[in-house]
Image (cartoon, rainbow, N blue to C red; front, side, top):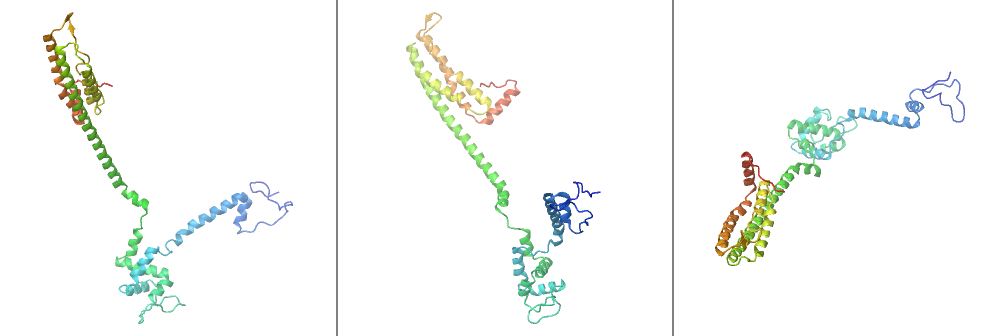
Length: 323
């Protein structure tokens, strides 16, 4: 009976037939065993997975054996080879088993390695970097004066980390700038609106006064100047922005401006006399005299209009909003 591997009979040599009674594959050849079972492509992937797993398992065993970074190394050389700390370095290395005990009179040290003789601490730090690094790190940690640890604990930050740390300050500065610009824009618009309202309201009252004076003597006095001044003031009032209550008040005032058309020359089937025209003109002028106060009230600040809208709602009279 042919031996099976889950994918058909045992593969035969190229160009021939399977050999009967062929000896089994020798042990200890996992690559070929995987290839025979999964095929060349899948076998290579499986071997890579095995190697990666082995590397991952073996990595922790060697973690920490590599020497420290360049900055820590530089700090160790400066600190431990200083004349004030050299004797302590030798003592620490001796206790850790890196140097042979015993006094030296020429300032040299004796590593425990049998084929190495006496040497200066600088030469020992160069040739036995790992031993020197461990001894110096232990000395700095014990002395609580470890510039190497500080250099390792506070690595140099990149531009992105610096940007992230400064981002709240940048955002606060941008918000303050935008707030200042918005406040300045609102104040500028309010000042401009105030100038336009005062100017156009004054022109309108002047035109009305001149028209009413002419109307008293001539019922067919020219109304064109009043119509022009009224339309200009009405245009400014319809462009008022802000809270809904202020917009509604401005549009209502624009529609209620007097003298939308000329005063009549006759009334009730008869021509109006001079006294009647004077009386009618005085009534119109009294209405016009109330406009300056109403026009300037439109330019009051937004909090006033919000408070006014709240008061009107609480009183049950919602402010009229004209689209």
